[in-house]
Each structure stands twice: as C-alpha cells, then as structure tokens.
Image (cartoon, rainbow, N blue to C red):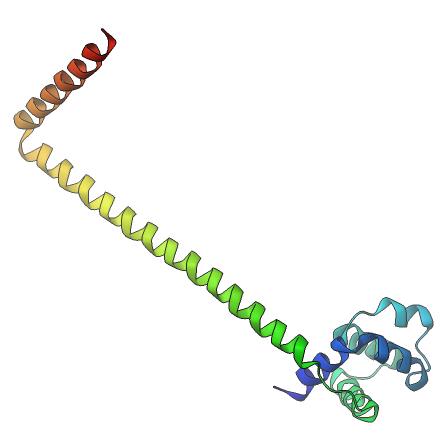
Length: 147
C-alpha cells in the first residue's frame, strides 16, 4: 500500500480526531472549511487551495502531520473493506457467468435457427408437410379439449 493510501486510510478511519487537530496545524483553515471536509481527498484539495501548494507538497505535509499524531489504521475497518470487496467480486463473477450462459444459449439458438432455415431451403416440400402435420395435431389437441 502506498504511503498516501495508508495515510488516507488512517485519516478516513480517525476523521473526527484528525479534524480536531487540523485547526492547530493549519491555522488558515476556517472552522467552516474544516467542518465541510469529510476525508483525505477533501483535506488535500482544501489545503492546496488555501496554501497554494502542489498536491505533492500538501500530501507530504499531511503525511508528516499524521505521523506526529501517531494514528494507526483501523484494522477492523480494513477487514470490512476486504470482505466487501470479496462480496462484490462474487456478485460480479455470478453476473459474468450468467452473461456467459446467456451468450451460449443465444449462440445455440442462432445455430438451430440457421440449421432449420437451411433444412427448409433444401427440403421445401417436406417442410410444408411437417408444417401441415403440426397444424393438424395442434388443431386436434385444441378441438378435443374444448368439447
């Protein structure tokens, strides 16, 4: 995990504690600006605007700030994220498998349609005979049930 991602995780897991310390470190931030922030990305973006520094410079300062606070990532939170990722991956896998089955069925249906079309073209009289026979059977089934 990169330092920025680790710091982001620490900040996002300890946001309330981080917010309470931010005003002491970055005095140009107003109380409203601090309250409007919700995570690492908000903090970095706001500090870039207020202090007119590059994102890299601000990220380095935020890293130092977090090191001084001595905060650690919440491992329970990390485990929850990991489990959520696995669950989402399982759902995605199921959807992909459903799509693969659909594609396979669609391909089979197209092949059957093609074979039937070719048979009808090669044997038009037999095809008409099968059609008439099928119609008579269906008629017989429906007329015998209606009595």
